[in-house]
Image (cartoon, rainbow, N blue to C red; front, top):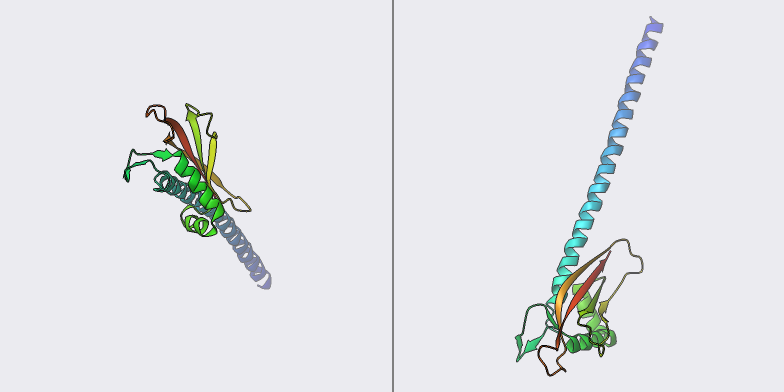
Length: 169
């Protein structure tokens, strides 16, 4: 009788080991799926943040083209306003902190595409605040019209450009 009880106890112990092994593998598999899901959600959030920052930068009143205090055209950036904006951001810590609340860890660059005005630089970094350690980086570009108000001919003062927004996490 004692021998049968030991066999039954061994069988029960074997079943318990197999059961906990299956539970452990299931938990490990579930954890892997959740990690991928969390990474996907974090990537989606970074993409949404990139779009939000890009739209905010493209419609920033400080650099948009204006005529008599009215917005001249949509997605138009005044080159000289953008240059002044960059100088203020670089020289005034308070201004940098003000825009850091909106742009966070990102880099915003304005680039001429066609026709390229040789009197102006090809690119202009409007805002740059990269983190020390970059885990993820997403870049988007918005086509814009770049206006140079110093040129008298209205047709020649506009060129096509891209506003690059690179967001870091």
